[in-house]
Amino acid sequence: MGRERVLAMDLLRGLAVAAMIGVHTVNALLDPALRQGALSAVVHFASGLVAPAFLLVAGFTFLLGNAAEGAVRPRLPRVLGRIGLIWLVGYLLHLPAYTLGDWRVRVGASGWQEFLGVDVLHCIGASLLMLLVLRLVVPGGRALLGAVVLAGSLAVLLAGPVWQAESVARLPLWLSGYLAPFGTTLFPLLPWFGFVAAGAALSLLWTRTRAAGQEERFQRALLRTGLALALPGLALLVLVRDHLHLLVDERPAPLFFLCRLGFVLLFVAAGLRACRGRAVLAPLIAWPARESLLFYVLHLKLLYHPLPGGRSLVELFGPHLGYPGCLAVAGALFLVTLVPAVLWHRLKSLHPLVGPRLVQAFLGLGLVVFLCY
Image (tube, one colour):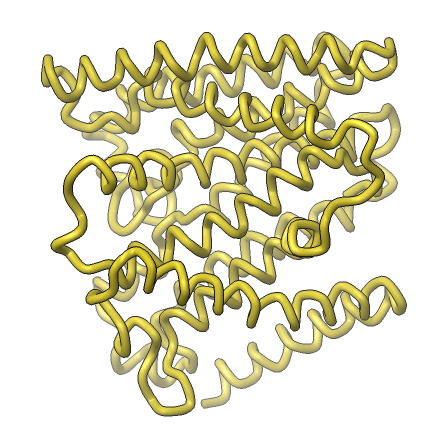
């Protein structure tokens, strides 16, 4: 979806991949006795910034690659294919059975809930499709920026009312999960599309400021905005939630969104500063940034699915480890996942047509196995 890259966004995505592996490992393996106190609260809040960072980078890179006039329609099949792949992988990771025969015999209501739950990949796929529609129907420039900001704002402001609406709860689960956290849904579009829209708006502003040669001014504006949102937002959130007890569930509250957006903007500003004058990133950051989807899939498979001995890492170690043990397992997962990610990226770089063909063959073979066994 466009070859242009902004090094600071690659930096943020690469660090988010590493943090994601650490967060999932801690969530799966940390001893419950350690899930309290100040350290646990800090870790919990920091882990809550990983998904917003991913979503913002997804919106930024998508619109950056598709912002130019006339750049989308000639590549529409390819863009839709990429969005569809992200969406499909999200559902494949939730498969409760790997063959149609097993599905008919073993999958009940809870299995359907697991399969239809909206996770971060579903949210990214649906969000990018919404951005694509906006890009196709709205002229570029200020009109597109206004449409993106409006759509993101509505996603944030409507989250609370929609989550509580009884009519939404009566919708089919395959649809209601995209609006509110029903079933096993973790990332409904309301309010999480707001982070994708923020990244898309940021890419439009970045393109304009860079064309004017004002990158440093842009970085300073991001820093000021991030500080204005993050620190007062966090203080106010703690006051309203923990002391005044006015928030039972903070996730649909606009304050939740603004506070986390502020911290992510601070990361972007820091990344722009750190990448000034650089041509490349360190390999341990660059590879996860380039192959974040593969990292996401492989580390979950290694963490939760049975290893050759018949037990998964979660069954072997969790939840009994301390923070050092969790970090050690996360580091091992990162390094093990790094090897196939590097090989896959080099294969695609050397043979651009081979990668898509292999993906198509793998999905086709999987479909045959699913239907025939």
